[in-house]
Amino acid sequence: MRYVNAQEILPKELLDEIQKYVQGDLIYIPKPENKRVRWGVLSGERLRLQKRNEHIKLLYQEGKSLQNLAEHYHLSIETIKKIVYRK
Image 1 (cartoon, rainbow, N blue to C red):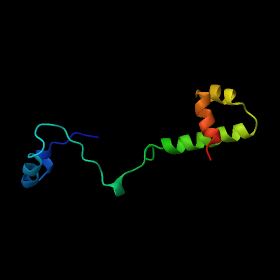
Image 2: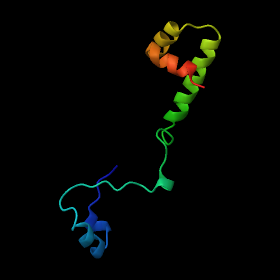
Image 3: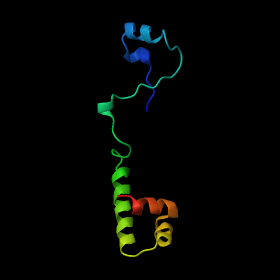
Image 4: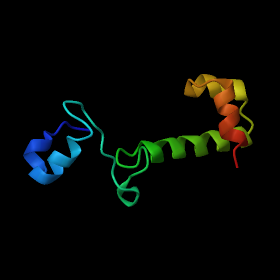
């Protein structure tokens, strides 16, 4: 998120209308619902975690213990349980 001076980008009429509600404060204007990107999609983190979790499930099915997986992936046993028991 970056800072943009409203005076530089908004028409004067719109700026005057907004100033009826907010003056001198920072406001966040969210993207429209159809323009939003899910967390981690752009960076690839969502895909990386999905692949990691699939690998954890596979190792568990092959007989690795929850404790072993937790230590190997530096996660809590509870987190490993959530991963392996999730459908």
